[in-house]
Image: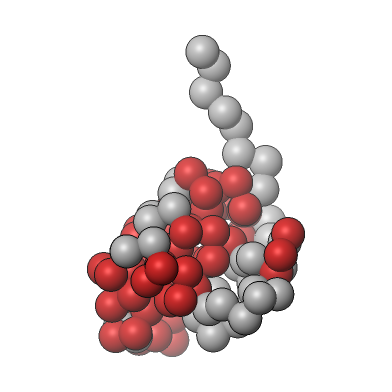
Length: 102
């Protein structure tokens, strides 16, 4: 079976592929672009439990308080799926220091 080639930041977020997320951001794909249901790449990475992808998106401008069409933040989605490490990552905000230095 051939491996899938990500075609967008949304697909990279779903797969948790940090290198591809960084590539798509460099090609002006925003980590805050709303897709189906208002889900951003950050929401998608949270839904699939990809902690490194979540951190990468946050560091590169992902908005943790942006809401889906049904009013859920990235932290809400991670919490509902039981990904408490991701909830803690978002809420601790250590990524903010890294973001300031980029």
